[in-house]
Image (cartoon, one colour):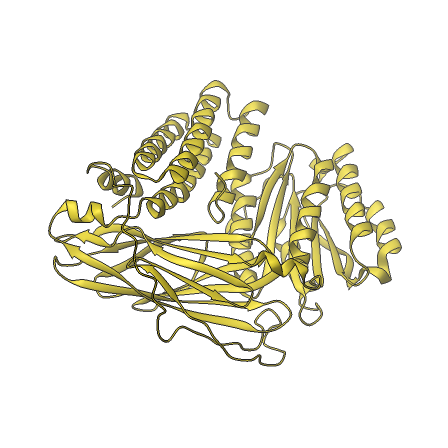
Length: 486
């Protein structure tokens, strides 16, 4: 069943009741968090103490958990599914890094900047990009580590990974000397930047910033590099410069690398993106966040939004979420299908693990959440969580909107308009069934998609207006896939 048809089938029933009966809060037995050696430090470091943490069910389809440096919840969109055939439902995992962690010592940062110096970056563009990198070098702490890679057809190390305090002035001179010329070949440069971070000091937060203004036909290779590196604790963010880069490529690398994606019309704005990367890196408190779902009989995994699938053995799915900075919140939507006979109850559980920067890591076991087979649609409606369903519709709509943007860029305006119309229908249906805050967020998303629909109809994809509309929309939808952005 497609995402579009599953959305439509869910909302054929009458409006979901807004009120949910309050469930007693019961401390679940066996809620255990184990501290062990930090994953971000690649297995080195002493083991931490063992803490007992109570899991708190707030209802039959929601459970919350708390551990060192982070807290979260796992919720299901449905407590009951109509028996007799496979039905679509969703799990939502929200993981938040404690904002109070900002008071802790600044995390040591190892940063690799991978900068496009191809011919299209010539003139004012390369000069403004170099100014932005120089501003970054001046603002980094002396104890931070930095590497700079330049690339066109080939990649060269401008600065091997080194302490900023030892190379600051020399590196500024090296960056000033960068010139433009040649084509665009991203994967070797990205691999070179990642290799530099293999030399990062013990316990450091590792990030790569990729900047490009061009097009490249090696997207799958670059995404695989980013995906593999993210699983080893390296965050990769991507910045598109100007109006001629491929946002599908750059956005895909950022998603696979569990980092940020943004686009700017001129290279001078790269400084703001780099500043954000340094801030997030320096305040990173949680790394290596993963979730393992234990699926009961009759329940199958379809896809996840906001996390990468690491493995999928039999009745278990392991997903990688990446790192979080203090106060950050990440969302993962997991689409599932359930074929549960009426009158039967199944239980879904999860283990959520993360590593704490500075030492220690956690493994929180979330108690079983119940999904029952129902005899009629009224039971399904009464056991539905409108807020979780709204969140799922929002995240999946962002994926569909990225499809629409890709179709528009390829010149298939009709396909783009069809996909946006499907989004509008799904978002409107979800808004009528959601609690007020979630409904208002869906209406904002709906308004954005209406604006994109008009922009795509009014401007050719080769025009400056069309390119800007496609790229700004893609940036927001990529963000909404892993963090609530509406």
